[in-house]
Structure formats: C-alpha cells, structure tokens
Length: 402
Image (cartoon, rainbow, N blue to C red; front, side, top):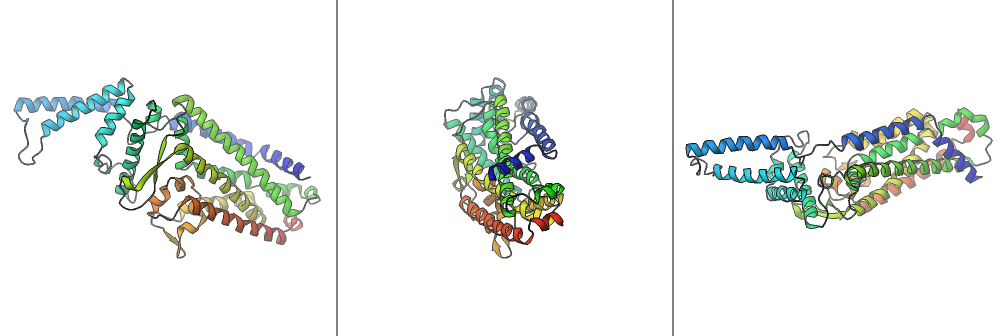
C-alpha cells in the first residue's frame, strides 16, 4: 500500500497542471541563461579589442608628439618617466591584442597575469566595480585575489587554455558559478513551488481521501517523499542539461580545476585563501541540496496543515527562503544575541558556505560547512517534531472538513 500510494502521489505531482507550465518556464529560463546570458556576460576581465586598438592609436600619437617636442625624459615636477612608461604599456597591450586576435589564449593569459602581478590597483581603483557595495574596496581586493589564483592555476597546469576556460564559461565552471551565486536559492524556490500544494490539492477530493486506509501521519510522510524524489529528479535534469548546453558551446572543463576559497579573515591577502577542486566544491554543495530540499518540503507540510492554502504557503515559505537577504545585511553577525552561524537561514545559499564566501561577506569565521550540516539537520529534527504534533492536532478529519 505504501508503494502504491507513493507512486500515486508522484504521478499526481508530475502530471499537475500547475507544475507542467512551471517546468516549461524553467526550461526557457535555463536556455536563456545558457545561450544568451552566460555567453554574453561581461566581467572585469572581459577583453574589448576595439577599445584597446583605440587606446594604442591614441598612445602612438602621444608618443610621436613627445618625440617631436623632445619630451622623452623624466617630468621634473613629478619624477615620472611618462614616455618610457607609455612605451612599456604600448608594447604590453599590443602583444596582448595580437595574442587575443590570433586566439593564442595561453600567451594572452600569461601577459594579462603579468600585467596584474603586484598591481592590485587595477581592481581597487576601478570605481565602477562594486559601486553599489557597502564595502567596495574590500570586494575589489577580494575579486583581485580570486582572479590571480585562477590565473595561476591555469598557467601552472597542463590545461589547454581556451576562451571558455579563461572566462569561466565551460560546462563545469558554469555549474560552479551557478552554485556559487543565486543558483541554490533558485533551486530551493522550485522545490517550494512543487511542494506548496501537496496538501491543499487533496481538499478537492476530501470524500474519497478521508477513507484512505493509511494513517494521516504516514500519508504526510509519503507525500513528502514523493515530492522530494520528484524535486531531485527535476533539479538533476536542470543541472545536467545546463552543463551539457554550456559544454557544447565552450567545452565541458576539468574536474581538477581549482576554485579559490577563503580560509581566514585576517589581512585579506593571498595568505587568507586556499583552493579546492571543482569536483570537491560541487560534491560538497550537492550534499546540501537534498538536505535543504527536504527541509523546505517538510516545512511546507507544517505550513500546509496550518494555512490550508497553497499560495499562502508559497508566499510564507518563499519569505523564509529569502529572509537572509530581506531582513539581514552584511553587518548582521548576531540574531537575538546569538552568533548568526547558529541559525538555519544563514546556510540556505549553501554554495557560499563551501567556498567561504559567506564568512567573507559577514567578516566572520564561524560559518562553516560542518556547522551548516549540523544546524540544518537540527532544524529538520525540529520540523519533524512539529509535523508529528500538528498531525495530531489537525488530524485528517479536521483538515478536510475545515
């Protein structure tokens, strides 16, 4: 009976008129993300050949003007050898331009890395970078360190340097960036949507379902399990399809590519960073997805018993999901006098836990992978107790007759 009921619930969820259009919408978003947004994404490291050509033309004119005037020495007021510096930057940028246009990406990357070595101001002095951040200088220095660690990894290993690899557009790198940014929150919102109606949809057939020869508590558990399996199936399909589409365009990448992670919060220098492979990063992050998915499905069971309306459940659960973004800031390190690492909402964006980004944003060192797993499992345990209590108070007859 358990198996038949589980299969029945799974089929209802998969055939839902509410879920099918949503999955099609997800598919459109995924293809737009993989075929339009990611390929055309602009970053600090995006190279603009036309702008460089204009810069070199203007610099050449300036150099000729200085030669004609005899201004090729040191400027007395500042002590700057402008002519010599211009000649250096002309040769460097001309070499980078030639390498880029010839698609010799290894040489281009070597020259770009050389130009950035010891030149953190290339990032920290860029006023357009993180202009809306409350701590722009800190964020710029952070991005500089991450960029230098990535370039070091590319140059010191035997990876063929391609356009996709250099700009993190390969299949595995795109998956990594998706999980590091808002990908986990998007996945969890999908789970919340799929599970928001697992109780309310049955109220249309209350006469039939009240006579089901299964205990109310067991029905709630089987409904949760069917939605959990369905959600994991859809999530897996989304991630695999995304990697496949990006892989066809830019290559699939390498599992042993290094991902910069933050291990300390001391001087914000290279000593505060380390690396893990993409395989380790993705593996650790994917451990968190089933835990978080199960947590929100069971939370929706509690909310469904109490609220009895799928749209209200969706709204309340979504507010809980985004509570860390809506009601906290980068200066929030305590809630109710307790360290923020003891609260589950801190770990909803799980990719930022694995790479230490959450610690960086909050300027703490207490938000760790191990603590996150413990806190989330403890939260699930609390929700399980609530479900057991609510199923006794709001029994099957009361739920369907209310």
